[in-house]
Length: 338
Image 1 (spheres, one colour):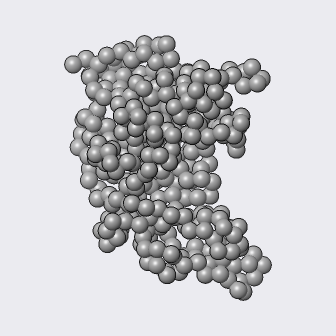
Image 2 (cartoon, rainbow, N blue to C red):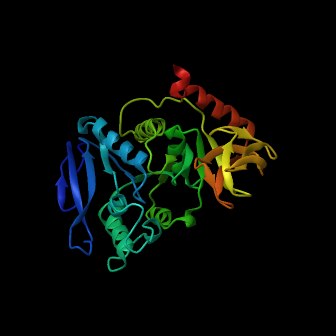
Image 3 (tube, one colour):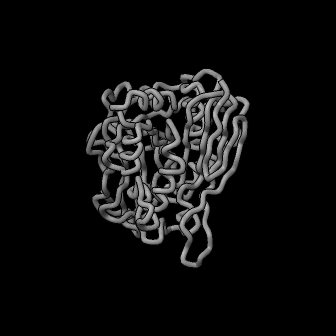
């Protein structure tokens, strides 16, 4: 059956069309206009509507690249349903880094928004009304914060059966449960009955080609699972489910020397790094793991302040299965194939 037209930003995108639109946003104090870029592929054939967006804070460049490559790689003739992509939701954060909004309020915590609220609430309201309420599924693309490199993994609500199936189809090595109440954006998607996946990999303000490739292939796998695209999902890895993640805090200040890598399995009491004086290697502080699990995040900044987050460790329902699956994923990395 032929796909229906989609009206967005007061523009009708017809069946079989690709369009790049500009969604008007609140003006800045200089009276200069600002627009959110919206890229739409309205397939010829009927199917669900999927949203993929990036840059909620304005510094997640891996997500920006994934969205742009995704839009360029798909033809409307091959698509069943509609794909809406937003390369940069937070245009202000992108152009005013490191500020994320005029008043400093997080857009993620401003959903579902307020038409007459502060800047972030107005952005959230426009996004909810113009885009979010028109989709059936949603994928958010994140990175770690500045200097915090994250192992590619997917977050979802484990109570949502559909979200779990899509998360498994994504083919990231780790799937982590999230609490819906931890984010107003997640609460909003839950209230709208929209299954949400969050893909996180790499770090802010950096391009990471491996993270970009995994993210791009992951979204295409999800689209195949939803029968939006032809083709089979390649089961390269068997993702493992994580019920909990914790950042380990630095016990002292100094230069961090890391003894573990992303994806490495560790046990309680294992040495995972050391902190030394910048001017001497004497009296170094040994950093030990406080739990069993797998390293999914590492602070790459060489100079560490006491109390800073340095290692993120995910604990699993079955640690042995987790370790085996992560080793399998390591074997499939580009460097291992060469």
